Length: 246
Image (cartoon, rainbow, N blue to C red; front, side, top):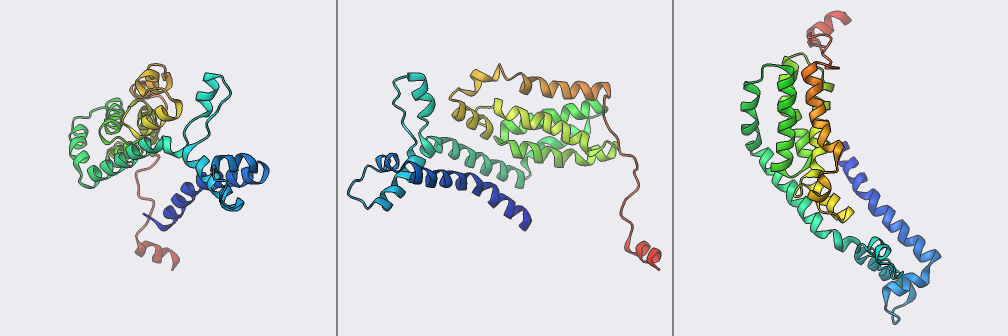
């Protein structure tokens, strides 16, 4: 991974943690008695008790006691502890998908698909089917986006189709179908965040269900299937550059 991408990843991971810690500091400043209640340790010095209270709120969450069952269930989410099962699933999905990609196992499954493709509609349908299949097999949205895009890139270039056509096909299938799969990292996160099993809301996710079919239909009818304007290389050899500069 490029060093710049490493820095961006660190920043993306640090943003939620910084926001949570900043919220804890504000709670300690403006609502210290409630934070001390979370700590439940009157023998500790107040600064240490405040730190323990902030950590307890982050780790175990807030328990609402309004008397209304619906509101209490909504506000009592369990903190980071309640997300551990989802985190384990996401980490496992990432590890499993990375092993399959580096071992080129998915490539061996996808390669035969490109041999029998005769039309643009069939090509886009293959991309959609592959992205959905990778979502099911690899259990991770990012791999379902990156891997099919890498594998079908050469075929799109050979047919002089613009990169945006491949990007749209992958985005309209790999991105939107991952929340419909219970063991996928996105499906697990949605189920945990909403408190609704994946298969229970899948039938109502019309955008996720219709979008891949609409993408195939657009390709079949040739609507807005952009093609490259030129097939000539845009980068000249070094010798040509030297001749021009001379």
